[in-house]
Structure formats: structure tokens, C-alpha cells
Image (cartoon, rainbow, N blue to C red):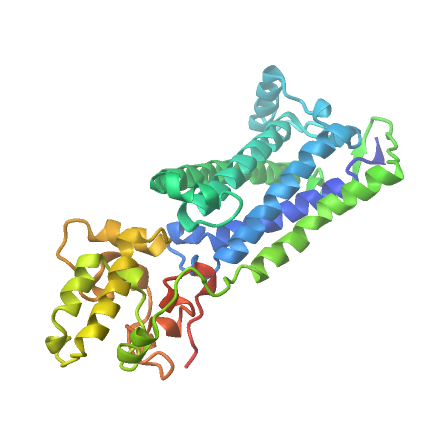
Length: 376
């Protein structure tokens, strides 16, 4: 046997890049929480999660291309997909019989296909969730008609993640078996590209165009991940004009609360009882009162298609009519993980100062990527 070049540089870049981006995607999705490890706030890391998830999609699409146009051992037609051969391989593993494969062994062949398939399903379902739940991304246009399916797609997305993790775990176990028990140097082979083999080396010299396309493709995920991670902050919403009278009369005592945070009946009840406005007399002249009430009712939660409005209404259900945003079940659920001392910080002051952490909250926008909790 002699040392030959088996794995080309593009395949090796793909492999280790996929390891990094899949790991980042799982961590920023708060996957570790299911194991009792509270490491990140997935809402705050949503932009990075979208970036790494997109990077995974690009890498997997490259692998399909490279499986058709790449060198011998990277091509799909070199995979050992015979069920009989797979069973024979597992039998040899159980018996601790060392086997030798220049390219993918039968188990690695199947795991490669499963990782590509499940990875793509994970990316696609993630893009659908992003559109149906956040109203963003290339599928954001589906939000209005299909938002009610968001939770179901989320479960599907989670299911694909678990299945993908199971395959990856099996793959890692196989690698460790080959490394520890049989000393095949399989990990180093994916770093150097070289393996011991009794087969002749098959040179692969791609043309200039194929080399350029393949390198640009396999390296582009890093640029894409950085782009998505740093460019998802929203601009000031322009579909809501806050009346000056509302800012003057209501915004002088507290922030100008977004009308889409409460149902119309809540606003009507509040405006009809300004003489006892949470213990204070907030009476204003009748003209101003009518104008403010009209603004609040016309832009209430029922008339909004924003994600928080829909989730606020859904969580209220048949419960009593809320007069405080902080009494809404969904608000409580989202803010429960926060340390209560945060509300005492100088720049926040209280729970009702939404704009301290959600910069466009006065306009009814509470995008995850815009959340910034002040340090003091």
C-alpha cells in the first residue's frame, strides 16, 4: 500500500466548513437548552442563525455540484450504496475486523447522502419558518396567507434537526471507531487529503473555469454568513405615522405605545377612562381624545399583520381584556427568562419602556435582530 491523494482541497474545505456552520446553527438555535445548557438567547442570535443556516445551504448545494463534477472519490458514483455491502461492513465493525476503503466506506457513503438530504430539508424548512413566523426572507410574502402553519413547520424544522444530529452522531462514532480501534488516520486524511491505499492515484486537474467556480462557491458561505449576521437590522417602518397629538399627550409621560400591541377594545376602554388612568388623572380635551382613540383603534392588533400582534392576540384568547401590554401572556412568556434587575437599569427604568430594548417599538416593530438590551 502507498500514500495517495484522495480528498481534493475543495472537498476538505466543504467538510470542515460544514462542521463549523452546522455547529454554529445548532448553538444559536439554543439546541443545547434541550440538554439543560442555557448558553444563548436564540432571539438575539437570530441574524447569526440565519446567516449560518444559509451558509449550510450553499455548502450542501456545492456538494451536490461537486458530487457530479468533482474528482473520483468526491463523486456520487464512487459511493458504496449496496445494502449487502453496508451489512457486511457493520458485521466487520462488530467483529472488530479492520477494513480498507480508499474513498467512502459503506456507512460513510450513506451518512453523506443522509446529511446532504436532511441538511437541505433543514435549510428549506428554516427558510419557510423565517417567512411564515418572522415575515422576512425570500418567503416572507407567504406570511399573510400561511402564518397559521408556522408552528407546524417549526416542529418539522426541529424534527429534521434531530434526525440530522442523529446521523452526524453516528458518523462521528464511525470516525472514532476507525481512528481508535483501527488506526486508519481517517481524520488526518480529511485534513491532508492523503490516505494509504492499494489503488493507483487518480489525478484530477480541473480547468480554469471549474476551479474558479468551485473555489468561489465553497468559500462564499463565509461571506454570506457575515453579510446576514450584520445586515438584518430593520430600517424605521414607514407604514405607520404617529400623530403629533399622541406623542404630545401620551408620549410626554411614557413612551408612545404601539397601537398594534393591544386589541381595539382595550384601547377603547382605556380612552374612555382617562380620569382613572392606572391611578392618575390623564384627562385631555375631547378633540384630542377622539383623534388619539381613532389612531389607536384603526391600528390595533386586530388590524396588524406584524408577528407580535398576531401572537399577542393568540395568547390572549378568551382571557380577560388586557389593559397593560405587560399583562399579555405572550409578553410574559418572552420576558420571563430576563433577570428582573434589568428593568431597574438607568436606561430602561421600567417594564413599560419598550423602546429601551426595541428601538422601533413605537412603530409596532419588535424584530428579534433589533433587540439590544442596555448594559446600564
